[in-house]
Length: 118
Image: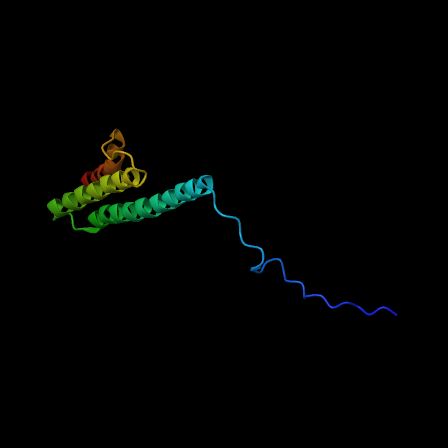
């Protein structure tokens, strides 16, 4: 009779195996990771600032019509934050923030003033 040989227990494939080190990241992998990180950061920063901008314009709509200066001021501040959102998106990607796309940042101001002054 042959006796069964005892071998080391099999390690589950989803666990880390110290005898099998992970492959090292290549420069292409790191560049791809950096690109994804920039896109995620841009999405977070721009949407956060745009929410602030739109919130200021909505707040201007709820201010009494007797306070027209306050309404216009909130709309202008909303536009300023919109421009900051666009500029920060370009800056995160290491591009010049001085671009014609900054005019898109004034969109909340234009919409807010159209609503308030109508």
